Image (cartoon, rainbow, N blue to C red):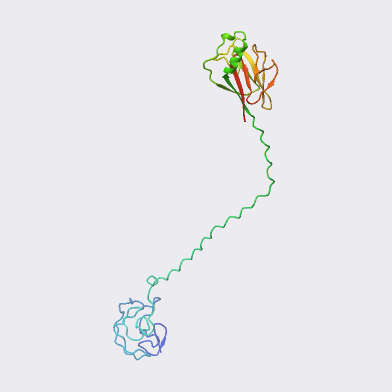
Length: 272
């Protein structure tokens, strides 16, 4: 029995009848190639040996060993013992192998729609607000309209008062309107020396000489009504054609007419 470089007990003394390696070849290294022989160079000259042990097939010429590159001489490579009848090994390196298909990306879960806001809760029931107090009645607006009254002038002339002939009726006297406001409204002619500055100034032009400096006072009441008071004029005051007592309050109404002087008339109007 002969031992091959791979450690097999062979009955043949030229090639191992187990692995087919040359009995006299140097021992194999860790890479599987013969010690001192570069794979692919052929190593020692290959002789035309007969059939390998265990096979009757002739050696395949020009076929190189896929492991070490030595030309095939039988079923087993003479250098590394590769079995040519074994299935062809997958020699593709990991670098050249087809890459594994990439795993499909995980599907991103759809974003859920925003949650609907909670329904608005009704506020706690509260008692209705108290009704506002009724508004006080609007105070009426009172106005004094000053004009020249021809009929009154004629009545004064007919009475034949002192100096009546010296007083003439004005050719033009524009209508004037005075809004009554405050506690009282004085009617007369302004006098700087006496310090009289009435709210309804009848100084003119035209000037009614029969009007005193302070002829009549219109007094306002808390309820919004008005009255007339003659404080002591020289020629007196008439309300609706009747002379009123001096220093007495006479109530006024909408449409009343106050006459004073020689031709002056005040018509009192009330507007809602």
